[in-house]
Image (cartoon, rainbow, N blue to C red; front, side, top):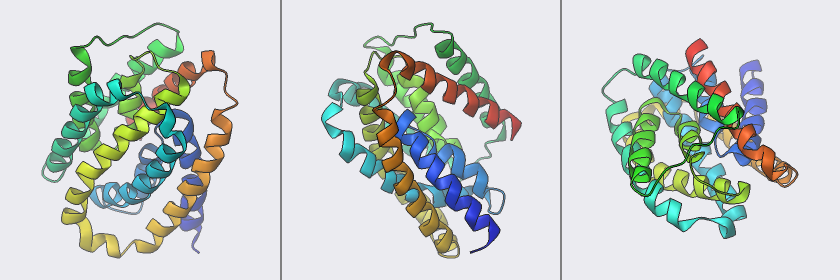
Length: 238
């Protein structure tokens, strides 16, 4: 195993654990890491495979806490936006959009860290879902955008993660065929990296689930907000 593969393995475990705590982390951490060695579009497509595996496991563990109203009002339009973003991702550059997204995430995360309340009404939820899904599909960081948007719903930590994870599964189902169609041949050349990432995120998913139960409810949203803030900063810096 090369030194870079070791780094990928460790980062995958960390990413899987963070995703179990915040509803995102795998794409946000692994995509820019792989972009050090791979073309951006191949990196996004490669990460989508361990992402859907870990997301499916995480949802199974928390399925009883799913909030179906948020899933329907926010999640379905998020999936539609994710599909559209994935299609656009194959034909347009995303540098300027990534900078814009970084600023949005910084503002969203800062509001949550400060303890201010964001709330989505009945009519705003589908629009927020569509917009967050579209941005996520374009830049390959859907989970962080989705979690930032979902801070506007009044959910328990288990319901937050379960619902975000369920939406992630729907979004993955919409975008993965596009990624496989556009980058399938190139993915075969990095199959070892994909296997390493998949094993790492699965291990991290189980570790994160243990940690989630130990986080006090009042601190949960600030923790997620802090991670969203860090993701926004990372998008601008890197």
